[in-house]
Image (cartoon, rainbow, N blue to C red):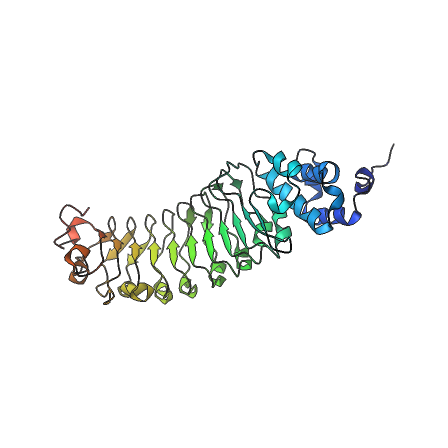
Length: 347
């Protein structure tokens, strides 16, 4: 019987260093399957890439990794990138630094319908921006994505992603924007999310997250926009949110949150809050009276809860058409709203 040939015999003069690098980020199972994105990408790189003879090891690996991503996500017109465009920095969705390092991948709204491959970890040291939003990408967030330690912006919203959010989110220390809304994630929000001190936009709306909002969410002191709406979150409203002085927009509606609205929630964002949306929960008691003298609140929605106290006069006095404040939207059940503008506007 003939001995099984090794990779370098099959692929001839391809450098053993390149094959070694490929084997480090791709499993042998995937490389042995001729139908896999990894196998297709390797075959293309070693046998079909028209520019393969003039490449450094790093550029070869950039091309291999991007090819795996394209094949995994079923990028339309993939051949135009791989066979007609010489420099991978000019491929669709790719942005490079002046030194040819891939720093940004933006494949938003391209009709993609595959899974995110773990090979993306090859860019762990350089990638700062990933946008795969508004596609039909399914499956879980792979381990390789959690290894992107320099990630600043991650946009995965409007896909069909499943599974849980891993405790490995703590690797994303520099992250500023996390958009995971409109997917099918389940499980609890990992407490490790609190280590993301630079996070400004934290958006998980319209998933199936359960459990409680992390108690110490106030540790995320740079939060500007928080949207956890349309999930299955229970427990109470976290008091620590008042520590987020930069907070301007809060959407916690359509969950199963219970208990009272903390009396100091009028001070959210250091009195600079613009939107507070708490409707369609199981909250009790009433709405805070103290909204400060900055009068910046534009919208407050508390309807469809179990609130029993009347809307305070202080809030009625913020109604923009009266010239006192900037409030233009107050969502409240009619039985608790005696403000003169509630008639015809309450629920």
